[in-house]
Image 1 (cartoon, rainbow, N blue to C red):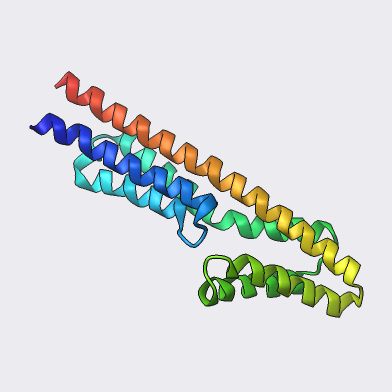
Image 2 (cartoon, one colour):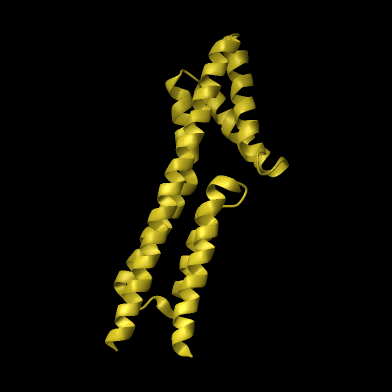
Length: 174
């Protein structure tokens, strides 16, 4: 019976992680990387921090989660900045994005962010074409952020699978 639990728990947590991975694209209101991280943490807390290697894997998974959770701000801001958007406009856009996430999930964050950048750049430059260029660039940066979070999520899941395999090999050796 113990063997069934040793197989069922890692598979159930892997299913949770895959849900988190899918939510990165299709359910942006859900923090997919945090879901993946929480499942890995749950595995460790349930008695699977058995060696320094497993603790190091959890630290790396945590760092990937934090980096992935911040990366969209970097990609969106950097992309808009390349086209000449001001830091004031980018900051206003990011703040509007945070507010929009609460006001109208799941699309409010990105929508409010893009509208705020367009409005701020239009007011600054008095050119809707230049404002639209910066807004388009920010949207492209958002797309790249999704790709980066997906890659980060896949790496996190791969590290979890390595962790489970390490645990399995140590169980067999006992």
